[in-house]
Every structure is written in structure tokens, then in C-alpha cells.
Image (cartoon, rainbow over all chains, first blue to last red; front, side):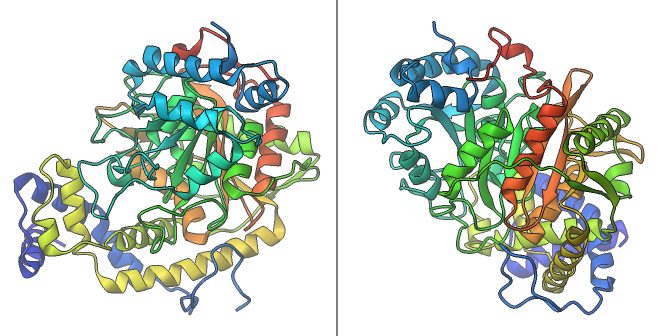
Length: 66
Length: 457
């Protein structure tokens, strides 16, 4: 995502919620977005090997057999 | 003045039980030491001497009878609401009997103070807090780690022998590593969590101990678990190592110290080293961050975000607002990654008992510029640390950070991750490592604490 697209995405996203942000907050959001967005796009394309989320996963124990 | 505080936590408990140490004197010693050392550290954000004395006066004859401890600013106490290191929390906060408070009280411990923490629990460095940053006792200009910054700094400087932290994305293990302590992230759901403002929604956060050594961590964890974690010998330990960034993109001094420690552990336990496959640690880290941040959205609304306390840091305000822009599809994908990584970890743990890699890839960075130098380049400590810390939170499995050396006078740490419910084995392995290196690293003291040397009971 180019810098201009990024700025527009952030501005439009915040505006759609009616969330106000000052210059410093926008700089923080921009930096976070620049850091996370490429990885988020990679995550969305990740082959999770058909792993469906466990229903109510019991995180205190190993996963149930597939 | 007596040197009760220079005993380990276990040593203090044993000396009190044997009638060799007066717990009232120990409490006053702790309060005096906090007054003396804390101004340089900002590890403790509040003491309440009368409440502590009352707690001691009514303490039962439990395994921690009369032992002073610190609790992170993440749980309410009957006389104090938690602040979560922030000017305001986005969840209701009120005084109360939280699970960790009750566990400590019932074990006979005395809560002597509240530990500082990274604002809203959202950083691995501890350099941002409503109270101002806590400082690392090894170098006051360095980060103590986060988010359990104050508990770690307090134990490292020997203000107390043990502290209760919380770990949602590495938040016990990072500060343990930076401050040269033993820190246990328990199996999810096993340690006291009642009263935490996110207890109903979080699938990553647990309470756990930060202590000088594994015996102390065992004692404090047993209180938090409300069940004894019996000691074993870890003989024949099968230690898994993973090839990839988590072991390779690491500062050379950290990599060397961890390799030495792993080899010592193999020798001490008569165990074996096994290379295991564990792919996907980078997406696992992102998935953990997404889940933790999404779960943290409870109670957030646009109008709430438009009325944030101006004393909340600009970083905190910006990141809270950014959470609203995270795509829902990524959160669903994060759940798939959780399932995938739980399966992969379970498969790896069929071959080995523990998996070892550096807790953090570089020692504590400067407070005013929390960046670390790695073979791949300069990056933020947060970004570097989460790579190795997140898997335990994503999967629910336990992990422990143990000190294994010093690099330019700053602690270096190894993480051991084990199977679900095998918290005691991690403590056994940590104790085996202490035997192997002659307790050299758990007894190493930062400059601020070198008035007395810690001793075993």
C-alpha cells in the first residue's frame, strides 16, 4: 500500500467511525499500519492447511486429534 | 539491619518457618529497602504499610507465611483498584479480592507494594507508563522489559524475593530476560486470574511468578496454581531446537550464551538434543497480536475513543484507535493459525520434552530508544521480541525464561517451552540448568543490589 493510499485508508476508516485523531495519533496509526499491514496481507493469503478454528479450544490442553 | 531480603524467596519462607527470621522485621526491611532503592528504579508505584502489616498480622501458616511480595498493577486489591499502567483503563476498575490476591493471602504472603507496568500492557519494554518508566537495575538507562516491568525490576534489585506478573504476549518472560530473573508463563487457565478486567474475554493472559531462581518460581507458582508443583529431576530430557530466525537472527552474544546453556542442560540431564520442525512462527506472532488486540476491544466504542484521557500516552491513544481498523477477516485467520500452530507444537512435543530458543534476541535496549541490533538489521525491541514470545500465548502451552549469561553486563536468557500442563517439568529443567552452571546466573546481582549476596536457606 502506497503512502497516499495508506493515509486515505486511515483517514476514511477513522472517519467512518467518527473517530477523531490529532496529528501525533495519526502519525502513530500510520506507523503501526505501515508495520502491520504487509504482514496482515500475508496472513490473509496464508495456507493454513485447512485448519478450521477449534470450537471452544481448550487452551489448557493439547489440541484434539484432527 | 538483618539480611533477610538477601535470602531467596524460598530461603525467606524456610527461615520464617524455622523461627530464624521474624516476618515483621522482614516486612519493615522490605519497606525500608523500597524507600532506599526504588527512587532510582520506579519499580514500585505504591506501598501501603498499614495494609501490609494488617495482612501479615492475619496471615495463615501457609507456604509463603510472612514473605513480602509485589503484585503487578494489573489486578485489584481490596484496598486499591488496578490502573493497568495507564491514566485510564477502558474497562471498569474497582478495588476487590482478585484471584492472585486471594492466592497470595491464603499462602500467607504479605503484599508489600504494587509493581509498575507498561501502559495498558501493550509493550515488551516498559518504557511507557502512566507512572513513568521503570528502570532496569542492571543499567538504569535500559528498559526493564514489559509489560511486567516493575515486578521484574523489584525482584532483580532485591526489593522483594518474588513478584506476580501477567503474560499476555510474553509479558512475564521479556522482563525476566532483561532483568536476569526466572519467569514462568503457566499453562493457560492454570494460575489465578479472577478479577482481571479481561478474564472473561482473554485467551492469552495468565498470571505467573517472577523470581530469582526456579525454586522460588516453583514456590510462588504453586501458590498461584493452588496446587504444589512437585520437583522432579528432568533426567533424560529431550531438548528440541528449531532452525530459523528465532535462533539465527539473534545477537551473537545471546546466541552463544544460549548454545552453551543448551549443551550444559543436555549434559546435566543426560539428555539429548533433537532438531525439530516448527514452521510459521512469524504468522503465529502476528496472529497472537491480532487476537490479543481484538480481545482488548471489549468496552471500546468510537465515542469512548473520542473521550480518552489526555494523559494517556500518544502512543497508547494512537494504537487504541488503530485497533478499530484491523480487518475482521484477519482475526478469523488468526484463529486458523492458532489451530495450525497448536497442532504443529503438539507434533514437535511428541519428539521432545522442551523446545529451547533465546527468550529475547538481544539484551535490554535503552529506555529512550528501544531498538535492538540483530544480524538482519536494526528493529524495534517489540517487533524482535514477539517472534519468540508469542507462541506460548497463542497455543496456551507453558514457557519459562531462565538467565544464562551476561552480555556487556546485561542479562541474557534462554526460553524453554513445554507441553500443556507440564509447568513442573519446565521448572525441573530450569533447576537442572542452575546445577549445571553452578547457579552462576541466578545469583548474579545487578549493581544496585550488591550490598548483600543472595543465599540459599
